[in-house]
Length: 191
Image (cartoon, rainbow, N blue to C red; front, side, top):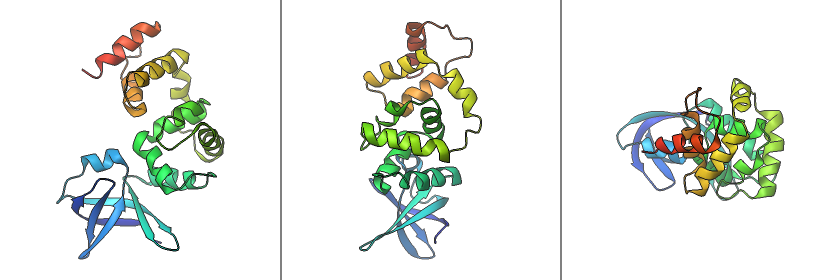
């Protein structure tokens, strides 16, 4: 119904932004990383998804069509509503979700707040047929068991899944194969 919105950010709230469009302030729920970069007074284009409920009309906004499409696909998973789908996009990047799905690592999805083990497995199964691999198959092949161990170690140290995956992606291609050395190098990413 409402595919895009272009307007000025009037206010950044805890979970959403108020986007002024044509003199009307619309509350739009956006993923946390995007919300963190937004400032009042900026003009922005959002790709939106309108959720119609008996008692509310709720707008969700995204930076790209791909994020909006992932949100829409996540809503098709049994037990996943808009809040959980937004939590996935707030915690993980599109690439990280694709890597987890195509590497059969549902446990990565289960680290998202509000997503349990069974829901993560349902999501992985549902997304496998819906997501296009794009160039992520090469990335998944590169994400070996040692990188999964590094990811687990970083999240155990308190880093979010997104932060941990960013640190792993920052490792040079000629990084040593040793898991401990890869972890040490990934920790340098945060300094």
